[in-house]
Image (tube, rainbow, N blue to C red; front, top):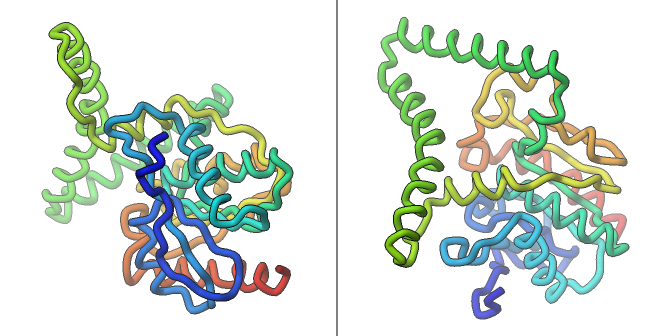
Length: 274
């Protein structure tokens, strides 16, 4: 790992309470400003993923090394949003396995990457039927209301999610055949590859999941497991808090105010206990 590339970014400094580490830094800036409790926050930014091939486990290990430079011992507080939530989970797992105390592990609308593979055949069939029925209702509703732009945006997002990984594989083969250095991949392709290769391990601790009503920008397909698959992996249970907004808006004003208000009691309780 290139140590000249700083992974820790101060978002808000305070003289009280051990810091809250946020994965990753840019998306947590508005939440840092919205919090009403006296709390230091440090963002973690990923190493340069465009030039370095890295797994979720490697990224988490690098982040753990960085936060321990600032805070050598626990209790640690870690929060991650979406893909960053997976990295935060792996960080907490690493710390717990080292015998460190993780006072707070919080995920914001993060789906367990093993969610679908952990479903039974019957559960998977139900999940797919629910997903399809929900999307059909959504598209028909947009069509009836004349929301052509919404239909177009959904179609573009669907195509991009399917085409980008395939396009990268083709590009990679062409550049390798020509013996030329590979171009930078998009963040979407990088994160998708990292997610698909990551299998969470059991976490010997407690998890707080902040999730929106329609998790991961989806619909009702996650209603049968509101923990988004995490309850099967977390030994001491999952505390689920519903917050305002959607997957794309939960970290932005005004919706982030809901997240901040739901997070504050956990930080205050930890502060009194520290």
